[in-house]
Image (tube, rainbow, N blue to C red; front, top):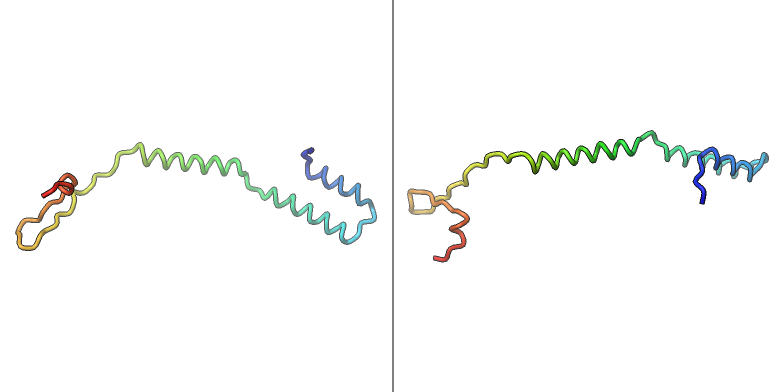
Length: 97
C-alpha cells in the first residue's frame, strides 16, 4: 500500500471521475479535501508531546528530588480527667497493655 500526498490522491480521484463531474462527485471531492484539511489543523503534535513530557519530568524531579517541607509535630490529644494531654506515637499504638 502506497502512502500518497493529498495532491496525488485528489489527482487520482479526478482522473477516475473525469471532466463531467456530477454533484455527488463534487461532494466527494469536497469531503476528501475537508478530511485532509482536518488532518493538518496547524498543531505541531510532536512539539506539543515534547513540551508535555518535559513538564511531567520536571514535576517528577521536583516531587522526588527536593527536600520535604518540615512537618508540624502531631497534635496532642487530651484525655478526660487528666491535666496533661496524652501523646500518641506510632510505636505505642501496637503495644499490648
